[in-house]
Amino acid sequence: MTSLDTILSWISGQPLLNLGVALAVVVGIALLPLGKTVSPRLEKRARGVVQHANNTLAKHKLDNDWLHRLALQIRFTETWKKLVDWLLEHTSLGRTYQQRFRQAGLRNPRIAVQFGTMRILHGASFGFLAYVGLDFLDLSSMSLAVVVLMIATASVAGLYAPNLYLHNLITKRRRQFELFWDDAIGLLIICLDAGLSIEVAMRRIARELAPTAPVLAEELTITMTDLSLMSERRQAYLSLAQRVDLPSVKTVAIALIQAEKQGASIASSLRVIAASNRQSRIALAEEKAAALGPKMTIPMIVFFLPVIFVIIIAPIALTANF
Image (cartoon, rainbow, N blue to C red; front, side):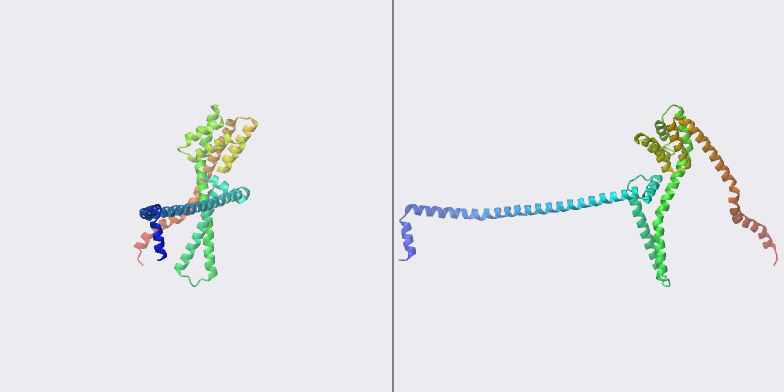
């Protein structure tokens, strides 16, 4: 008898053990399909949790990298702005350009950066166009030094082209301001004689002249705001004179400062200035009228005399028998 037969004969003699073995086999067979269906779900769920955790960590790391790059960019931008502000405030060239921007009506505090970028782009584009033009003309006989000199000249011209545009803006704005400045002085005298303060008078004049003289209305509005906010009123008048940079405006600013300092009548001072400006305009008109004759001499010689000669000589040349 083998050992397996011995074990089976021993199990057959134990009824409770036989019942337990039978129940275990039945339960095992019943749970066998359940184990096959539940395990993949649990495994899939576990994999999903792990993948979600990995994606969350990757996304968190990406967000941290993006925030880090954004913080570096903001820090660089702030440093660049501080550097530009320091250069504009502590260098003579920066203060000069800042004053010219105000005179041109450009109030953006970052206009210096935009203007410098525009100058660089203009210089590079002019140099590139000069190179393309020389290459298109195929001037192979020219030496390298001459080509480099022409490209450098074009680049320098491109660098100074925005300065010409800025100068044109300043000149145009001064002309528009000066055209209505005497009228504004007259209205200011009337308002002051009526008992209005200088701030209220400027506000009234700016509102009345805004449709026809927007530049003058803008400058008066800025001056009125400076008078209300600045601790020293003289600084508001000096700022107006610096922004416009006209002799008549400087004269009015000095008169207003002296009148407020000494307690004199502002209307009387402005009335004297208005009369002086009127005489200056009359003298300027007489000067232009006196200079009209000499200026017309060259156009008459160039355009009229040839026509007169043709009218006199043409009939003789046509009727003569040569």
